[in-house]
Length: 184
Image (cartoon, rainbow, N blue to C red; front, top):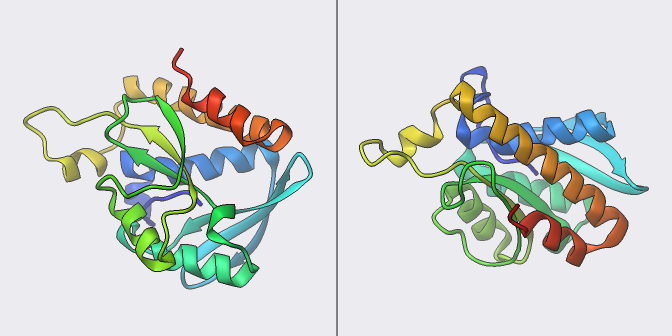
């Protein structure tokens, strides 16, 4: 599941990097439109013979938990089978980190998921967007578009995560953790 906000005005914002990750995965691995419902749009594809559902919530970021609950219930999956892609201000722009379980670290979309699922036991792929300058509010920062010079770093992160998902599907979680969490 890639976190973001629905609507054309949010497409290129830092907060929507999770949506962009879903687009990137579909471009690489393919996927057919599977369904659209009140809480999300779903595509079905496969990565190394593993069936995956790629989800973009149609709720706003702070209500992402409703989408997580809906898709897991609908497909009969447990939270530990879910991977959530989201922006992270605590990571340098373009840095990636795969994390299992934990709290929300102040991310309201992750907080919503934890509350709705009543567990933090799911995977997250954190995509670094960096901190705002001291004179800029955090909400303004995440809702602003990436500057053209920042796009290259974000593109690199999306490529790296895609490679990490291939490694995960082919060689397992430990190898994906080592790859996605390694600093170049």
